Image 1 (tube, helix red, strand yellow):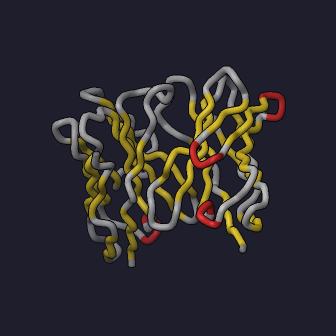
Image 2: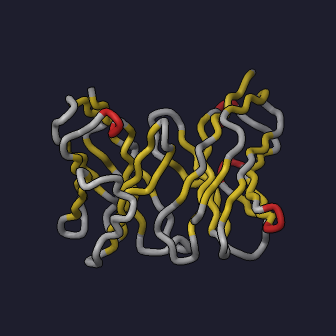
Image 3: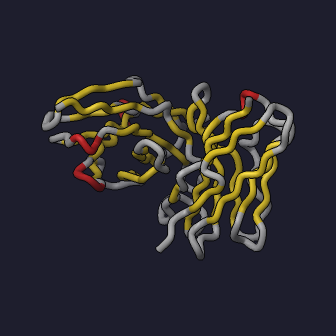
Length: 116
Length: 113
């Protein structure tokens, strides 16, 4: 079956612009995660959605970052007023449910964001 | 707070040689440990995981890892490396009911023929 897909694969934007990154999880997966992979910070957790529960936003680095998940499926990560330090690869993952024991996180190929 | 240290940024091994990638974690409770591999332009793929029980776990692609609580380590090994193993490897930890993976900085593996 299809894996996690992300779009666009690459995004170049100018400082101060808003960007939207999209994630399509594996069908039937109720849990969805966003991570950021940057040269300075490595791989870091951003946000987690599980079903209809309130998302865990504890990893979002600033209030310029937000994410939503519509209909329990597709998720959009929005970065407002982008800064050069936002340049990174944004990875999305999904799993069949919460908790790591029985629910492997499957990762998408990522969106490479470059802020000029 | 959980943290993961991968002391080696780069490792180069000859094809056919054995491999060991080091991972040390810091965590107060029982950790759930993972190794992921990332090939250029690809997402992360799970190689293996440890939750409890036998401290030597087998994974895909001929990899194995050993959990050593006394050393807070979870080193990844492979007896004979293939050129296709060249990639970046990440060790990660979470707690029993955790949903955030905490990753190490990664180790880039180069394989020379």
